[in-house]
Image 1 (cartoon, one colour):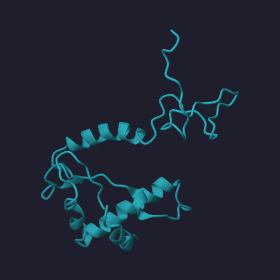
Image 2 (image 1 turned 135 degrees about the horizontal axis):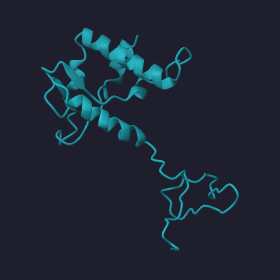
Image 3 (image 1 turned 135 degrees about the vertical axis):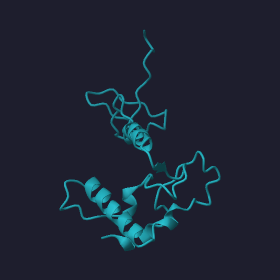
Image 4 (image 1 turned 90 degrees about the vertical axis):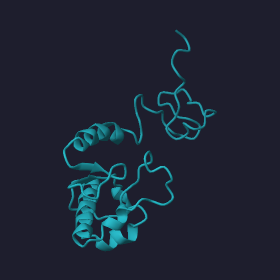
Length: 151
């Protein structure tokens, strides 16, 4: 069975295969990073939970997934957002920073929609040539407009 398991990589240097972990009670690589945890998928956990939810939501009558489906006449438009694009927020009155970012972005998008200023953000990014397979983030390239409309 020897050699069946891959050699562990460290969190900070996993792109540098020449940086093996140093055996010790608390393993560290030469740069001082700790080992990756098994089944730790940085940046992918939200996708693993979000994709099934998106699938359920998009099956509802009248829902459209932007930019992949025609959205202009849809009563509900599902779009990918990146709440951190709003910049630093004061989260002191919120249970966590994520809550502050998500609620602030939702309120901002609602303000823009009520003012008729959301539709320009739904125009396809001209740099993306394959709109059928490349997703987009609502508000990307319009950060100044988003920040100006923040509650």
